[in-house]
Amino acid sequence: MENSNIILIPYTIEQLTGIIRSEVREAVKGIPTKETSSTENFLTRKETAYKLKISLVTLNGWSKLGRLKSYQIGGRVLYKESEIEASLQKVQTVKY
Image (tube, rainbow, N blue to C red; front, side, top):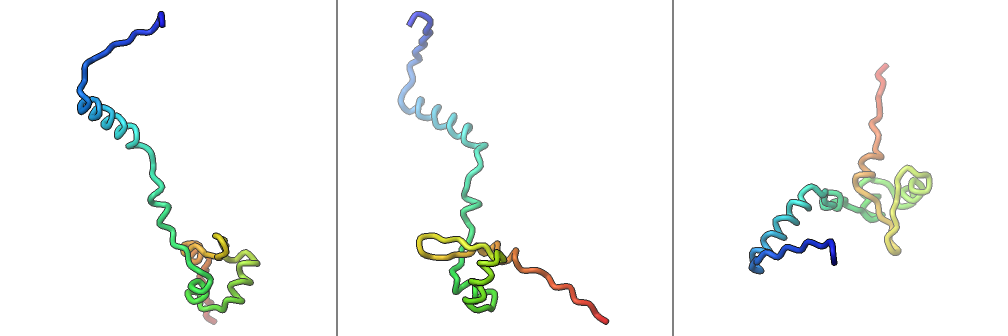
């Protein structure tokens, strides 16, 4: 320990704890949190079919064709609500 410069300043535990807390808060302030992305709603096959007003067989076919992306968690097949909304397309009608 020839090159070590150790300076000891007498702090109470409360003062040291306060200094550490303030420094940690400043360091963590700029880190983005995942709380906003965790609000994604998942729907079951039955809920998705009801929302789209289609049968479960049609929903299964659309999943196999890639029209709707499904997620398997455990033994359950789920769909993201935002992806269901995004898969809907506006139909352009033409008047003659």
